[in-house]
Amino acid sequence: MPPSRIKEKPPAAEPAAERVNRPIRSFVRREGRMTEAQRRAFDEFGPRYLLDFQEAPCDLDAVFGRTAPRTLEIGFGMGDSVLDMARRHPERDHLGVEVHRPGVGRLLRALADEDIRNVRILCADAVQVLTHMISDATLDAVFLFFPDPWHKTRHHKRRIVQPAFVELIARRLKPGGIFHLATDWEDYARHMLAVLEQSPSFTNSAGAGNYAPRPDERVLTKFERRGERLGHGVWDLVFSRTKDRANGDGG
Ligand SMILES: C[S@@+](CC[C@H](N)C(=O)[O-])C[C@H]1O[C@@H](n2cnc3c(N)ncnc32)[C@H](O)[C@@H]1O
Image 1 (cartoon, rainbow, N blue to C red):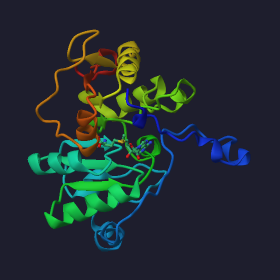
Image 2 (tube, rainbow, N blue to C red; image 1 turned 180 degrees about the horizontal axis):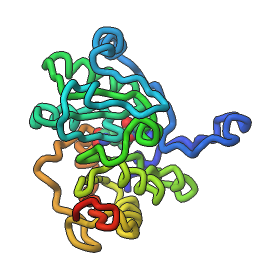
Image 3 (tube, rainbow, N blue to C red; image 1 turned 90 degrees about the vertical axis):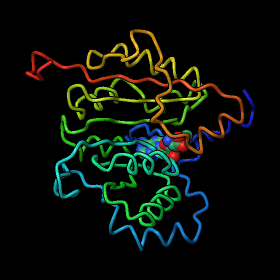
């Protein structure tokens, strides 16, 4: 693998006092460079598209003004796939969650430019959003495309895909709902496959032990294009929420 890919900064720069009692996060907040347009987008279009993080369930019917199939994308980066899905599926509502403010600013502007109405954005930790704001069995699909791979073994605990995270997603999905993941890091793909296949809450749509063919629907993101240039492979995983007869899910 090209050395340019291993450039995650260890989170050791934090003062020890701040590390105590804090959950392990899958991201390090880097403000990066915000363009003036991205910064302005928060003021101009934030009121229309941004939801504030709250430690209470969110009434999504009230937020979107309708009842519709709902998807949630974790870590949308610059927002390519949220935008693409919102365009192609106006009959669905789309929630995008991202901590990287420049990406949020870019997506806000793109949504407003096209007057897209079926998207809301949370600039917050997706784990916190899923834990507090999303009610059980409310989502039709959850997307996790190219999550930070945290290459080094000592950072693997920061990978967002862990058994507890997978069960959290399972609870928020409707029975039969889809959890679609993609990564360009083979070791992370194997880890994802192992964690998901150990979960009683999910069934592998591609058959046990298999990766899924790349769905035509998944748009090529900036991150994936970069990986392609560097000659990386891509692994898709498509799992469906197991219908639980005991709980009357109707499966
Ligand atoms: C490698 S980038 C991929 C971005 C995008 N999905 C793509 O394919 O271009 C991973 C993204 O996940 C975001 N991220 C990581 N952990 C997150 C979390 N817990 N909540 C929200 N966003 C997160 C990061 O800020 C980053 O933008």
